[in-house]
Image (cartoon, rainbow, N blue to C red; front, side, top):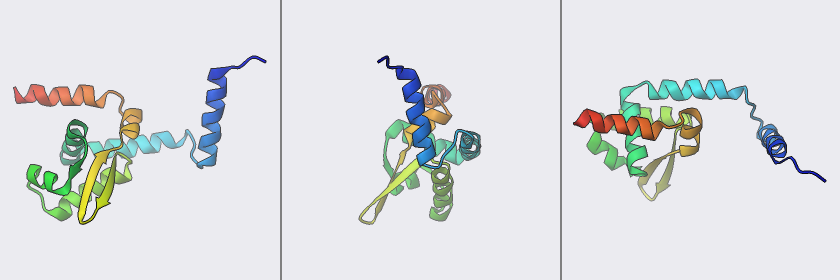
Length: 123
């Protein structure tokens, strides 16, 4: 019996997508949502901070932006709806981190390119 690993892997992925009620046709709409989210300078900076720092609490963002809490919450919600960030609650604190799987799928090489640009701007 010959095993076709590439073919078998594609079949497994297609089955998983079918089970999750997702299709490859959904990729364009997810990409558009992510690019729209990243098009805003505040949300772009939030993503860059999270890529650079890892997980951050709301207080960490308050120190970085001169926006009201509702305004920042609005930006988090858009990034979360685009699948770019994930939040978790621990007691009264909310922590935010990147969903690297989604970012890498939709914008491969984001960290290498965009964080490098930030350091060049600072010089």
